[in-house]
Amino acid sequence: MHVGLALFVMLLVAFLALVFVGLFKIGQLSEDRKSLSIYKFATMIALINEKITEAQLNKKNISDLIKDLDVTGKTYFEFQRGNRKIGEFLFNIAAFLIMICVGAAIVIWLLNLFNILPEALSAQISLWIALLGIVGILSLSIFIFPQLNLHKYLKEFKYSLIDSFSTLLSRLQFLYYESMVAPGVLLQIDRNWEKREDLLTDLNFIKETIAEVKSYGTWSYDFPEITKMVVLALSPIIPIVLSMLGLSTG
Image (cartoon, rainbow, N blue to C red; front, top):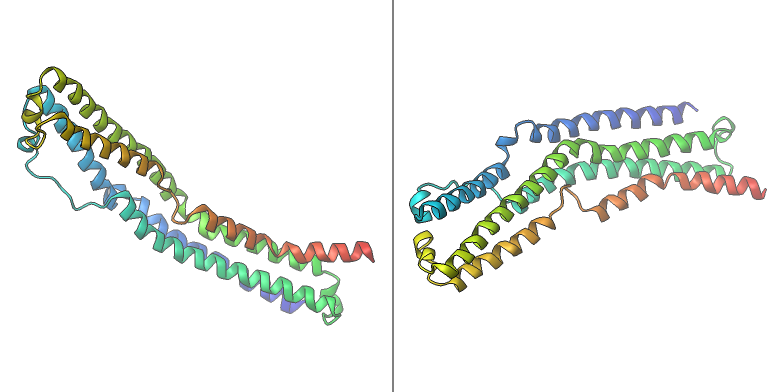
């Protein structure tokens, strides 16, 4: 009884300590959103949108309107590569705790199966395995909850980025139709656009970019990996089911 209680307390303390570590590391990322590397990327796209509109209205060249473009930011894909490292850190911690719970539950069940457990612990085997199952499920929150704020921001950023690229696409489409009436307008806006086919290439590129951004995830790990962890967290319940089946058949 004392050994089981000590094991449970140890797991609970480890769980709380690692939750605080995870919250400290992940929570800081979304506190100052302007400091995130993807923020500069969104600002750059917004500036290009603004200047393209100004160039169309005033029939000026884009390169004359944008003298200095900040390209130090990271794209969504680059940011997620870095974010994945933190996700792996939390994933490994949660998986380690869950594996301890699974191993302890299986060991307790096997000891009880071969009548090796002390009588006091054997009488409450379902309770102890249930507690291990609860700790295993709670360990999953080490991976999920610290990411909630960042996930929410990334989801908002993703759709905001899609809107920005869609606006850029709309402006270029408008320019494409305008060039049907006044072909010379293309060279006024961009010296690289000698004909509509050149603009069409950029239009197709932006369409592909929008489709790519839509496919980006907003968690540090893909859902198949999260599903595996959920299954692993629920696995300590299996010995309880086996014990109940054994009692019912007996």
